[in-house]
Image (cartoon, helix red, strand yellow):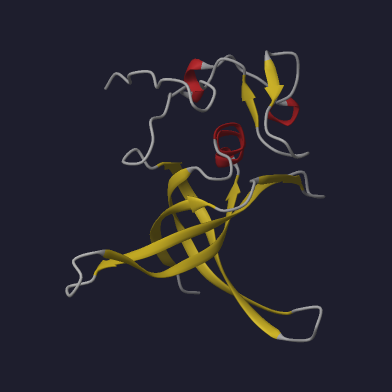
Length: 165
């Protein structure tokens, strides 16, 4: 089987959704939009040149970090294996969807500021009980959205904290 790995820079277009599978594994999925822009030589203006949409799925160790950190509208960089998924829609039309099985996902620091908490700095915990009494609180406005540590990120709109290198 082929392995087409790629890096896509874009914006999370849908709320990331975490699902528990019957085999005990967890997966977080979301849609990613990557806009292409080009410089119009005649006008000197940047113009949109199309949008690439793909479904990103995050497995294993990536689940906890993505679920706790990212939400719709966040600028990210995603790296992983690309696949084309063909299916028939409810109205009988054949469709294709581009999917990425992510190996790495992180914030695009050219478009945002991030507060970093290393997994090695956290106390050991049962990842299946991430919303336990460890100071975890749900955020967002839809069920099944992200769960983050109460002090892990400033509220949107507040001044960013400096990040030490």
